[in-house]
Image (cartoon, rainbow, N blue to C red; front, side, top):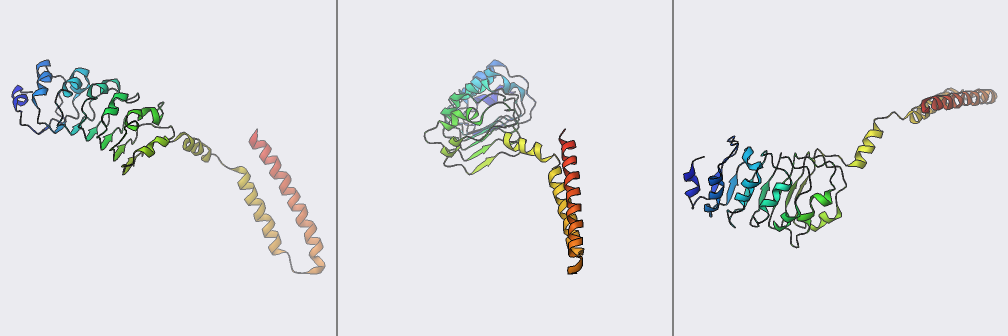
Length: 245
């Protein structure tokens, strides 16, 4: 990357998305603090951002940065602690990184955030409360959009989400609550008892309909009907026992 970019102190927006940058020389990282007017920085799809050194360099930019896009950079959860002082941020995009642990509590300093995208990460064994602990601790949270789609979340949503009084969009698609998963597993099984009950009702109803309205033959038909019902009940019980073994 040309070094002259870091000398443009009036630069307000910088987009380096999908440039395939694997490494930045230390001088470039240390020069980030010169971009004091920068408000929007998008560096998605560049592996060099997975370095804690690069993230620390971002923290030196100053208090004007309001939008930071770092999707698909291979960033891990602990490395996020390096950006805890970017308190002016309004939008933080971390989609598709390698976040597998809870978000550092220090990010609770980012109480001005209106949007955070944590989608397409991997949080299978983390409670939602622990994951979002820092943001939920904000006294006056500004969060309006919380995006967590397809992140393997399976724990119940915390009641503390009610503290996000400005929230207008909560994206949870592609996740599966544990209770829903259990219900889903059960729903794939065949309810043989229900099937037998339906068949039994059908046969009994059938015979009840075709019985001639003849008083003289009614007792005879009724006896046959009771016999058929007993046979069906017996066969149903045998069927159920064999299926439950």
